[in-house]
Structures are given as C-alpha cells and as structure tokens.
Length: 188
Image (cartoon, rainbow, N blue to C red; front, top):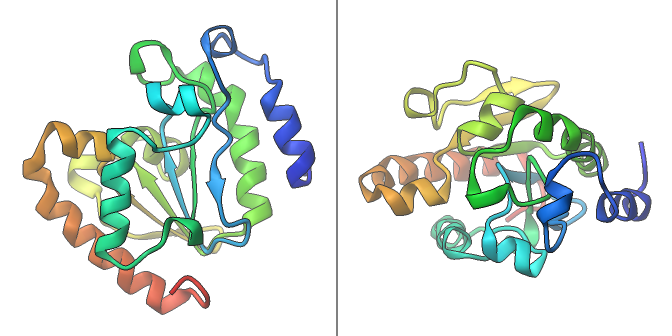
C-alpha cells in the first residue's frame, strides 16, 4: 500500500489505459483523508476532466444539494470515482479501464478506512458490491462487506435525466443519514 503522496504521484502520471491519451486532468478524488463516508461514482465528466476535481458539473451540484438535505458537508466525506480519467463522450468506463484504475481506488479505501461506502450508480455498485447488481431494484439496500457498510444510490446524472427517481433517492439519503448516525463518530 502506498501513502497518500506516493499514490497521488503515481495516479497523476498513470498511463495504464487508453483514457490517459484523451484526458486533460486526472481526477484523483477529494475530501477528508479520515472520512467515515466515501462516495464513489463511475468516472469524471467534462467539467471534472477540465478542473481535476470530482463532481463539479451539474451532477456535482446536485450531489452537493443531496448532501445538504441530510446536513452532510462535502469536506467531511471523500468523493472519488471508479476511473480517474474521463471516458470519451461520457460513456461507461470499460472493464479494462476499471481494472487499470481499481488499484488506486482500493489504495484510497485502505488509507481512508471508511465505515460507509456509497456507490453512485450501477457501474460502481457492480464493481464494488456485486457483479449482477440491479440499481433500479436494489438502490438504498445495505450490505456489509469486509466490515464496511455499503449502499448504492442513483447517480446524480441519472436523477437529472429522470427527476421521477428523486423521491426514491431522498429515501436513500434518509437511510444514509440514519446509518451515519448509527456507525460514524465524527461525520456529524
């Protein structure tokens, strides 16, 4: 396992897959290094690629609003992605791209040691929770894996495309809030 500085340096210079050829910036992730809660999306979008920061576009603004609904501050959590470079035209990251990046994410999880991981969308849930995960049926359901509580929610971009999913997502947020109060010591 690498320390934060070594991991960051390696990630910034990564050439493990074809995404490195088209990226503007590596999006390492950001937030508290002692976060009890991690949010993991699928990959950077256009604004994230341009800024090098996760969830700063329209979906990121919605994520900030969602966090505010449950009195959760962005600086108290860690926000990252399955892949650290933007897939062209915001397509889903390919398995080979996810595999190239998964070591970075595993290292981040090992350094942070979160109590809760929230997968934002089906791509992260299928990689981290269960290969056959069905987001429409299983969002908001908790499972424990290696001592970490895990739950998947609709990705904020899915909620922008289909606002009818927002009431379900609000219920998922309330469930997250309850779990944080139950297992976390310094998030609130």
